[in-house]
Length: 609
Ligand code: F6R
Image (tube, rainbow, N blue to C red; front, side, top):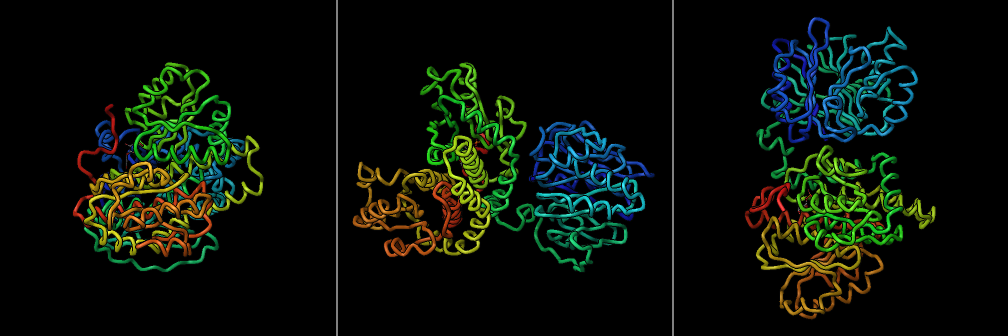
């Protein structure tokens, strides 16, 4: 997730407006920043790594000349957060500049093609292919307009994008296009703006037009023109009046970041399905070679590792050891060695306990692999290979979208490894791959159809003193994560454990009305889990079940149930099944009057041991 912005002003300097707008988009990314403007037929650019304030202090982002320009605040996906990878990116002759939010899936092929045509690339980003492709299209047909060249370019792009392009070819225009990444237009008497999000221009205008997928927009002093990318058909759309307060707008109308981030999960999962094959294959190769594999992480990331240990075993027949970061050195510090591999999972890439495990492992010559949401973090610097999970910044303290994205990447790795090891038939592989592609829609359906019901359940149980969260198999990890969410944001002391453990102690706590949340995918554990539900019911527990749609057997046993669409394979089930539990925790926190974004005593990134 990055933020893009552009403006064409009738009067005045664009640069300070771009700078202020990027500040308002900083929540979308903040590892590097850049601006480009036009003045007197010349392109002016400033960009660097670092947060906007830091870059502004060094370069003064406000003194670029001209009344038209574009800007970008970055959250790295392809290429480290370095000056060379910061946007805007320019073509070979520095006549065209582009800013981009999204992921170009076919950039490797396009880059090769363009390099063969003599284009010289400066960055490691996927974005740079866009600007060279526009350059190539203009070169091939010098009489074509910038809009035609951009149109030809975006028709060749696979993946997601919201782009803004400026060029000396038509220095009075900004060209924008959108596919799957957000893009909005703002308009007032003096200017027209394009941005990733409404807050960018909200202090300047409340008249906005939402650009839809597959649309191209030309911005000029006269206003904006929208057309379809597919057939250039003209689109007429009137601006809407936006009545959000600026603070609300940053959250896209959601009351809290946590709810916004829960709702972003379908989009984030789609991004995880766009990872480059090369890195997944490389990491799968390292895992395949290892004599022993430790999955090391803390908190929610540890729960992702716990789920992954089931998934690696079930798909790739690989035994892995999930270990809590703060325990790794004590537990395995002496035995880990050159033949060991540590896959460290940390959305921030800065968690001290996870990094301490990594240091301990490196001292003993083990191989370190990383999975993180923060390219450029310490974890990316100390890992032999790392994967960026591409969730965009998560602002709510409780992990939600980063957790499901971690699960998606880990499951993809397990699938690769299974293929590499010949542990999975082509049919099974195709089946899981097909279900994987549908997962973002499945999560979307859960949010759309179950949220109201979950609100009612939250109201009903808001005063409960404690909860159990139970699941079997891979759903034990879902149970642990559901419990952590409730505990950390709603402050309800709760317990989670594999459902089979109840009878070994915890069941003694259960009395009439004790709420027990069961995670019940229709997998191999379903029958036994029903037995565990019966045990709890017999002691008066109130059963809240997360079930597969149409699971009549459990519906009859549960006081309350939430449904997940049918047909999700067992190994992928933690992804959709955690979503209702995130919402349950969120709404119980709201019912109890707590701010879910900033739970007491917690920090987003825990950099102390
Ligand atoms: C819980 C939560 C924390 C983090 C943990 C690890 O909602 O967010 O438990 O998961 O602090 O953080 P990372 O993934 O940054 O290493």
